[in-house]
Image (cartoon, rainbow, N blue to C red):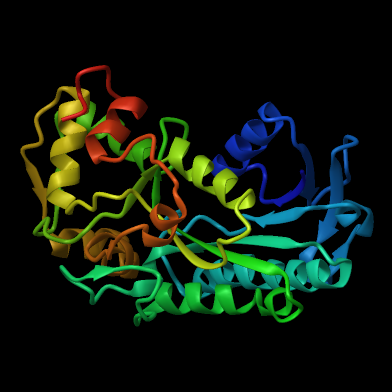
Length: 302
């Protein structure tokens, strides 16, 4: 296939480019600077300017654009940046995909679309969107892909969980603290922490690219949901460190503000029904296996 990727320089994008090329696919990268190689094409989503050569002969476009949610404390301007970095590029790409007759669009989204009020209730792709900033952000992000879907393009919405990797993301922040014995649960620990290994994030995307029956929302999450307390204990076991601490909810709110309630103290108990029904086999089906492969060593899978 020829696959065009927007957001190829991030954690997921870098790994996806490498995986696709290993499998013999052609990858074209959309960049927001002057193109520096034959596989790069310049685009400016703010101006709705896209080098049309990028989409010629393309079998699929994968949109991974979006500023990092937890990069800093939220305020009005940063929340607007989170929206603009997702919704505008998605609208531009979806319209371009429709105009160029590209058969498939895979568009990033987030599992927090289900909101923080799901508690112990299991949610899958048929569950409704929830309330809150992140849920609204994800809902509007997905809605921006409609120009492609309305034109008959197979449009897949990748509702990803926290991606576990030693090269970036949440584990980059947590691992040094846990290595010093400063790990522990956040708040009461009963909230769910949706997760997926980087290998399965990439595996699921590649699987979806090659499976024309998959369309609409897909929960890209590990198949065995865990609470934050369970996640903390599993990370401690993988690093062979105790997890004695408890970070109170009020401290998290004081330190992080709104993002604490939106993304840390609440989380959906999401399961990957669509992927499993389509036949995807997870490389790391449990949090123990995912963490052992990421930061631990053989024997830490329990």
